[in-house]
Length: 329
Image (cartoon, rainbow, N blue to C red; front, side, top):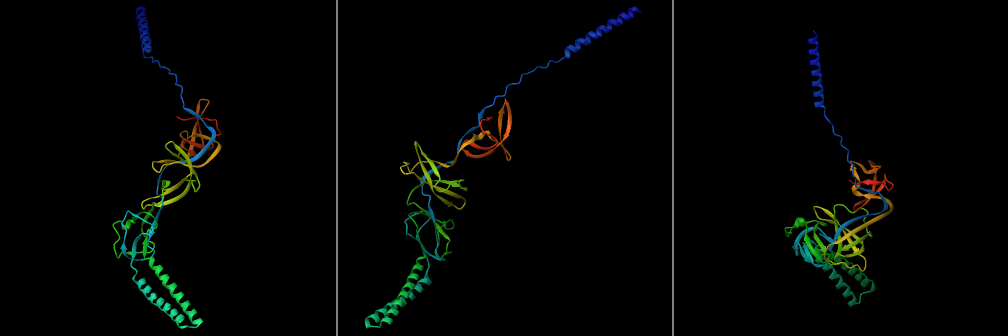
């Protein structure tokens, strides 16, 4: 019996020893890593001055053009100009048939000549004062009516309004045939005025906000810098699109060449002592705008309201007071 118990005890000790070794083998050591410190690129919200401006490229050229329309309705008689042709002011571009008016002028000329003859006869034969004065009045009336008809005839002629360059309207790009019917006010073509060059820039679709007549501009051409102002704003309709020509008048004494690009800075207005941040610090999600602040090493989102933009900088009108540390990355 004692031998049996000793064997059992020995067996139990062996099993326990095996379990202990197995548990030691299965134990997993989990390494502990130390978190890296986050590095932010930051800047400070400044209280300074900011200006709203647009930077555009300008050139010297001919921004002015004028639509050439038919003064009256009628049939085309002769066309004296082709598309894309140089013109001089007063050149006859087109005539319309005026047969009915010509007949009326001929009839009126007969009455006019008769009135002249009557007055001359009364004067030569010693007519009384009242007969002569009545003949003078009748002659004046006939002359006025005749002159009016002759002036009406001139409306059947289409003249060049300026020195420049003429281009037929799109519907007449292949030419305008004789006897074609045209309506009063319809466009015959466009005359580009080339009598004088101007500095201008072209803006497509929408006008520049807050840029008006008299707005000051800065001008740069190579190493030359000077000032100027907006002298005119011309709407340009070109069929498929519309644009605006901003005509610039450089200040007296400005030395700019009439070739090569000119950088134009439209200086709309400026504000003093406002909070200004880099534009890339502002995040947008839907209608929400915010910046990331770094406060005691912690990133905190702050909603903001924005004002004018000057290149890479934006005015903050609400949400910051200046001096805050902003996260850029």
